[in-house]
Image 1 (tube, rainbow, N blue to C red):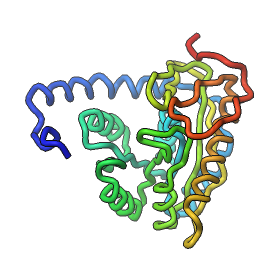
Image 2 (tube, rainbow, N blue to C red):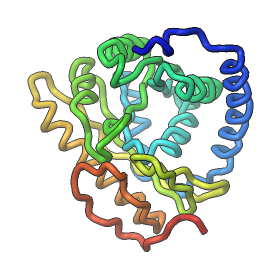
Image 3 (cartoon, helix red, strand yellow):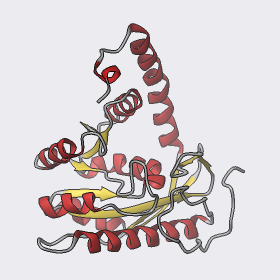
Length: 253
């Protein structure tokens, strides 16, 4: 960790953080409230996973995080306790305050800089019933490749992994490594949820990661097909992906 990261934030930084949160929190709430979920395929899998009482880890590709998170936040009314791992940075703190204001549990840590501690903290909060939302190809890619760490945590905790994805008829697509997509106001959103996955003790986590990645790919393609869109793939794409079946569009109309 750098010396700068150990210093307490300056008054100017605290002011900027406060302003950022005060703007983003109502904006995120309004945007989330405006999205119209047209279809949820496989929703019974989520209800069954919640009702089972077993430790749960919803997971989606980093590119498909925004509306997947929005949908899972709404599932709090059915007993889901969503959690988020956020980095100990200024951007991470803004994210933490925004989603915490929506009822989510925040786990502070970084998969790259505090990986072992973050894993330990995730393990601890899952024992209290929190369901951390995981993006197995994050935080820096390559995109659409499930890393073994997520599967190791699932194996260690014997948690259920719940794969899901989404697409939308209108969206912004950022120029980030994953080309994350964010549905525009009043966009029609399609959610796809797959069959829950467990990783048995002694099972190869590499093989399980490959299988999970294939399932997330299939869910993403199906969501795109149902929405009739084809977002650009991540910049750091670790494996070839078949094109979506829907009509190609930039999502910017």
